[in-house]
Image 1: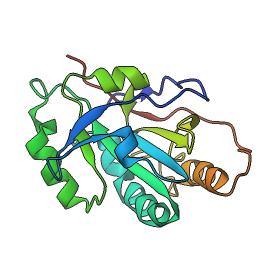
Image 2: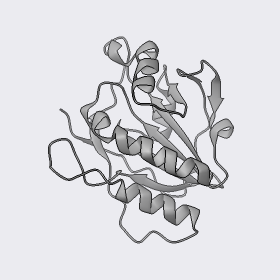
Image 3: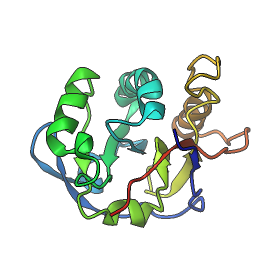
Length: 184
């Protein structure tokens, strides 16, 4: 299990635009199509990463808790599906169904979106404000597979609350840790 850290894209960076196919609906979505009135959470995940499997219950709870408050949510998989067929679009659809993902799970086949975001690992979290500027990037919380710390989503939830309620972030932004993106 590789332990790759986020690259920590500079705060204030404008959200890169994209148009990718949603493996849940077969529609093509852009950032503009999915963004929320209060902000947008972009999460790079994949189907086979143990770090992603570990955090999925909390990701689903965050999506359910904050969508109604005006947060748009997007998951993207950018892994090389030739070398990692378990991350294929068909398997993404199955993964989304099994995890009750009620938000788009987009396939970044040519990996251009991951490169535009400077994404490095799965999971990798990017929270943009209503002006599409990067407000938070980093970890969900301190929980990792096998470290005994329960999932809470505390770091990401604090950032989302600060964004929605127009507060400043008090905690330092720590990089996410997970499996590296499988580049072609």
